[in-house]
Length: 110
Image 1: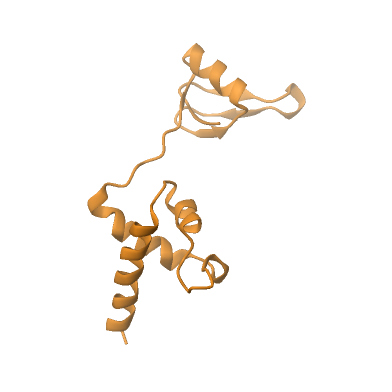
Image 2: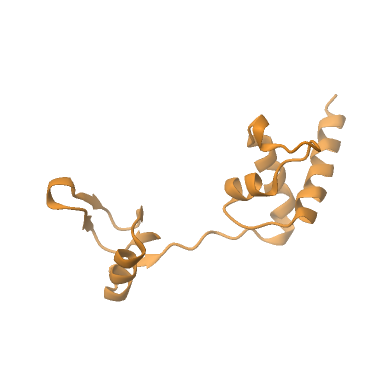
């Protein structure tokens, strides 16, 4: 579970410990993260959600960052690959709208 430190956290075994400064994020086991959250030492990281009006632009930017193997046999980018870049869920309809706009943008650039 990903958390944001509210105080300086020292995590790990003594021989392998590391410090997480306030405001920094860390990936912890769910049990450890819940314990630190309950103590008020950390808070759960919440992914920034893109507003719907900006979603198409965000998806188009994500498409531009995808590797060639992130596209399906139909030539469209995989929804899961876009979600991985964005850090939030999208629908196939969202992808299709952005994909159409992205292709039109590429055609205009020719």
